[in-house]
Length: 78
Image (cartoon, rainbow, N blue to C red; front, side):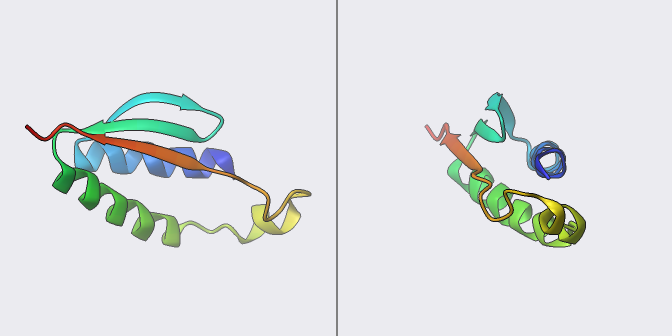
């Protein structure tokens, strides 16, 4: 499940022009040149995550419902 999430995060970052500063076990620190770009990415990420087929992995995971994933977003507006 975490691999699918990471793939989607990184793919959408490329599309939105974001930068991955740090990642540890699904927790990301990412940066953008503007707050608008960060917001655009957040919306894009949500839409992309809705398209992932989670059913097999979520249903078979012994810790289903206990995955904790977070992102810290930094926008470098002047």
